[in-house]
Length: 121
Image (tube, rainbow, N blue to C red; front, side, top):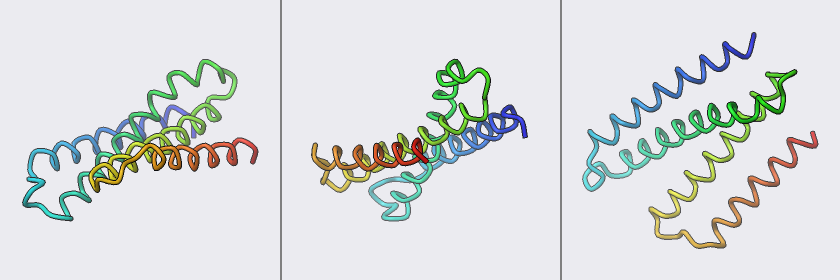
């Protein structure tokens, strides 16, 4: 499958998750929705962030890998997932009142180790 198909699929999925995020944002009251509303908020926000970051990273990474657009897409997808996971993890910790600099540093360190593992592999 050409990379154009992956980009179209990622774009459609990102738009759908953005719609889901906006629906959660406007139709759920965080004070009365309880745990379900918070979980839906973070899942929809995370999926939207991961898709958006993947598409934005592809715009930058494809310049370096002009001869291999699939490699550029896989690097962008991995980066989008890791950066989205970092942001959502920080958001969850912030909502729990447990966000400190060392927690954030540990999350970034785990993401960095995963990135190094996939680069070496």
